[in-house]
Length: 270
Length: 264
Image (cartoon, rainbow over all chains, first blue to last red; front, top):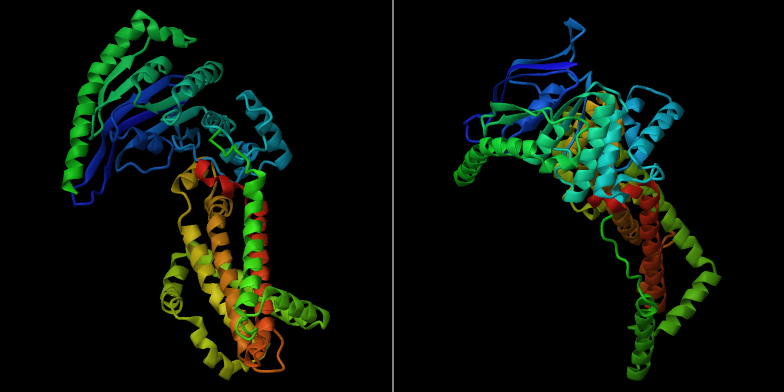
């Protein structure tokens, strides 16, 4: 599935009458089976964008279309082909691991035995066999992240929207989860939109890195990442990686400075 | 895994609370005997125990306690059903919240004991009045907590459910109501506490011939049977503690995630 964003603009009503432009005429085609990373300073509207793509927010103006490249005429409803993985995970704390993972199927009315069977298989595939009946509160951060991933994967949607999914993890766990995600991407060839503010992560995972400007969020530059797949963490020390990193770093540094100045200004205005 | 308390309490730490109670009782006994205080003012624990046994034997304790407990549970049950139902309704329907809000805002801060004269005029001093006064009192904290619980449902969880394909009804049944359960339970705890208070208080009015711990207390007090007053107080304290503890136990059984809520 292609995700085609055209002039997507999101304006939030501001507290002091001044409206905040979170996203400004964002246009991009996220091609089928491509891993796209959205990289930008906080407040640049990258989370808003994936929520608009997922049909969870309404853009102020502009359009997002989901198009099957084989049937380019039939536009698909937003949200029907995608599923989110959230930074705050949003696991249901009262549901066991298996019931969290099976949630999407339960909403579709899949009978309990069938959905549990599927959920158990997925739980095992993300390495959580034996923890099926645990509550999320009794798991470590990395394990909870796996549950969140399995809960999204069970729906077998062609588009995976990931909003800083590994942002809250410690460094080691993050590495393991990145490898896990790379494996899943290589196996399923989903279209992935991955929001991050970590340059290294964006380059390691993505086929392209969309560098965004500080608020109002616009595309500053799209960096093609031509590192071979399957990717591995060793590539981080390669020369090609270093060059990509430098390029992204120079682009983003300016924006981070602008973003920090904006935040300071907002604090003073209060 | 988040850090958990690994150092289990030692024998001393576990026995200390009991030890303090024992020392307190012995101290009380010795103090009363040493100073020769009249039992009418402060009876020694041994005398209280004797009266307690007598009340158990002649069946008066069982009867009065039974009557009080029955009223507590009936009053609480009415308040719980009505309170949770209205609270959830208010949380889900803005119209219901708008209509109910001024009533609750006006009636909640009113000391419910102030309603006793009115209720006695309307209902007399029988069962109906005791149950109604306790149910009314318990109703308010339960409504308010249930309403707050529904309103405070995590926006992130609702969005996640929506993303996973839940419709409006499914979101309410599968996300909003479960996430309100800790708050609803907190309201039920408060409600149970005030039910106990109000039933015993209501029993104090109504005069002789009525059963109930409140009645037992007030009649014993009037004839200066201070031992009986103390014995009744101890019974009430223990019953209260047992009720609260069993509520906590039920909480853990019904909502085991509540204990690990801060970790999710």
